[in-house]
Length: 118
Length: 114
Image 1 (spheres, each protein chain N blue to C red):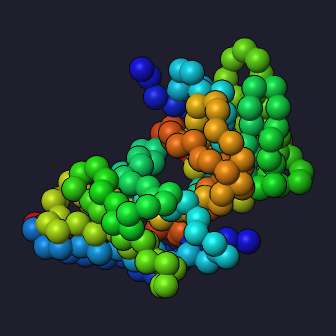
Image 2 (image 1 turned 30 degrees about the vertical axis):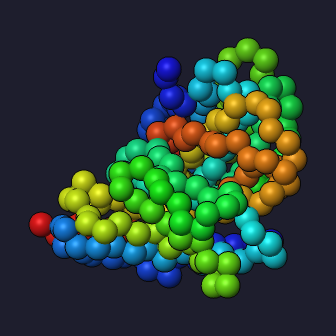
């Protein structure tokens, strides 16, 4: 059973370009989370998605960032008009469906995409 | 909002020595507690977790952690460190009813001297 897959592993963009980061969850997982890790910092939650639904985007910057998890295909984190401050490692995690509001489903992390903005 | 503090940014231990990595959290009740390890260029691997029950939790790779409610702590321990344990360690909390998202500490970088 393959783990969470992210591509590309490394992405270089110039200021003003768009960055598209892809995440394929583990087989059978329908929940996806995106986290950002700035240099010398821990991971910070960005967004939580289920298939075709954004459940919690409280950690997403208000502008330039968007995420989707379509019915078919990987989850996409899109950053428009990138700036140097967007340089970071972006991690995706997935978890299985089920659980309740007061339970927790373990998240499995991918290897991350390291974005460098020149 | 909940927060996680890992007071030690870097720790160096000799191979075979014992290890304790500190983690304190701020939350009004008992959160879900986790320790993850991140090797260079890799994703995060779950070492252990605490939801409820026995406050001493056993994890993979010989690690254990103890939840102390009175100190709001969840320190990670290993009795004898191996050179392959050199990595960055993150403590994280999840809030019951908080939708599964995790709040991470800033990490502790572990160096192992041979």
